[in-house]
Length: 225
Image (cartoon, rainbow, N blue to C red; front, side, top):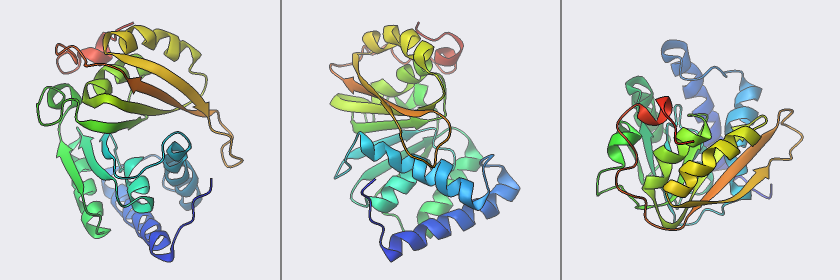
């Protein structure tokens, strides 16, 4: 992938794994805890996002990061990005506070809340260059939860796996209503992945109507499709 890791960055990934494994025994943060699987299915998978986005000084929102994925691996490798992690589950937000402090990652903030609520706050609405989401929801719902955070000219990147042809088709209405435009679906071609993984990239081309997202829980229950 053309990414060179320093010894300090490698140490941070090792520490990240150890803390994730330890906390996972008590808090069930992830179903993947084997050392090699975490390296591939969490850390490497997160870094594949650089195949569609070259991080620099971007302002990034990670919606539903769980154990910090994909944004914290990206932050370790690209320390100049500024990141907000929006996590609805309290125990996961507590872990995120811990690991960010433990790894001494600066310009990273954690918010324990829901996208449906935060997206209507003037402080965060349409303020982000990049919005990320991984394994949070199907694309029609995910578009409604994320595009309101993107500034015009920014983009939303969703990590997906399996056959998502139907998801893409069903998300087109939501993309149009929320002022997005599908740029590409980038297949991830790396020997470490035996399943079909891809990145869905959606550009934000205009301001999203303020009525979106709808109130908490509705995007998932009644997606725009």
